[in-house]
Length: 105
Image (cartoon, rainbow, N blue to C red):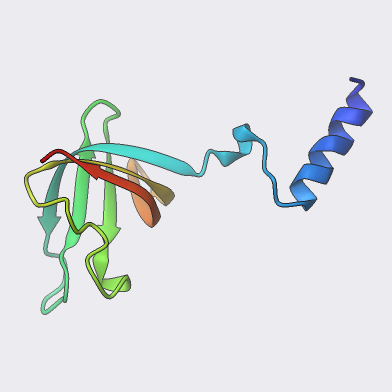
């Protein structure tokens, strides 16, 4: 396939909303023990944090924005695996949407 045809195919897929695998790097997987961190007085929910020791980064979930506990089923002190979209701040991934959540029972 010639370069022009590849570029045309990529543009067509992008216009249709189909992104190539390489462009889907806005997802992060975080596996580790869940902890809660109180960051606001009188908050409905504490900030959830999972430290991924293999990757050397943290994932945070602000449950207050959800209005419910989006991490239900994964309890404090348990090992959880979270996959979601993020906004990165330093070595911390602030999770925007959770695509998948798994935990060890």
